[in-house]
Length: 130
Image 1: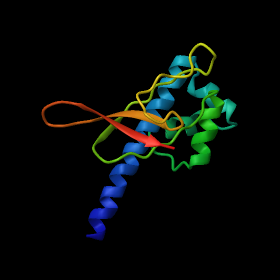
Image 2 (image 1 turned 90 degrees about the vertical axis):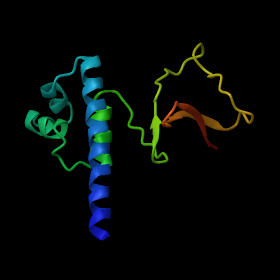
Image 3 (image 1 turned 120 degrees about the vertical axis):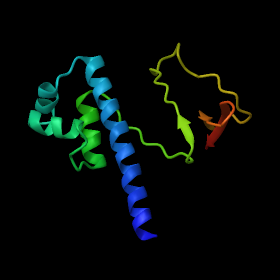
Image 4 (image 1 turned 45 degrees about the vertical axis):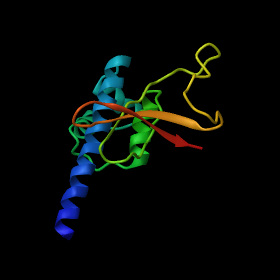
């Protein structure tokens, strides 16, 4: 039983690492930042960035934040129910773009729309934070 939990935790850790490194690569590409340039920005080596990008570095939340800030980005973490696909939507803060119109009854709550998979169709599910 303990071995199954350890294996399951290892799987979910690998999923989180993959999600982070894919997002890091996407931001680097969008901003035109090479591994060498990112390494210089965090006072590290290109080999370390390669290690991070391949998922072989044992990095902390502080390291993830350092990499994000070197790209003028912010690290966001999110917990969700198992079996839920979370879709992030980046919106720049500005007078014309906010507030977002959200389908909620209590405007003081922030609502994140997520999609739950079912065998027949996708359904909307609201998760409220407040």
